[in-house]
Length: 285
Image (cartoon, rainbow, N blue to C red; front, side, top):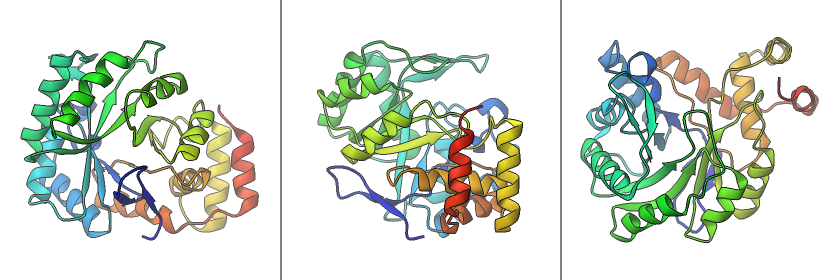
């Protein structure tokens, strides 16, 4: 895997194809996996195949994905970057709700440190907005609280999740931001301007839900392209993201070793210019 990205202002460099641990939990990101041994095998296979950054959150499960990562991989190989998220919690009914006060964030950092079994968190994404997506609220208070935890040495680098371009600009006045994690894929391109701004600033953009939500037209174009390239539609969709901008990092999740291998093969897939043009032109559904 030769496609790499170095985070702005750091010596931290990762392969652009990572792994997202959300699907290791039970249905609706709640409870333990149906097959724990399979979940552990996926994590070990990912690292064996060159994945050196894993995305997780202690509210996945809750506490499930972090503990699986620790059981599968600790003591952690070097270099392995674990990126976690804070800013939300789970209700007893598996609901999601914001938890972004200074006390909330301090407890979340402590929880991630404990379940991952580390002394400091490599990258912490501050998950903002609400369950429906970004909003226009100021992010100064929670970001300043997270920056205070960084100054204590509990957090090495800070990222943001589910934000707008205006909120990113607000954040840059408070501290260094190394990555942004938002909803983006072939069918959902609201962040085009944000991606270009981050690329100019040397900041990583990590799309969540990189697969899915495709219209029938988009699915047809993906399938036709995949047939010509002797690959799968999902590999084409991932390759399109990698070719969209050099600051895009991918974290497709799966609980299947076979599916993991298919996802990672997208790194070696170069889409011809005519297919890229066609995919670009069909735009959002």
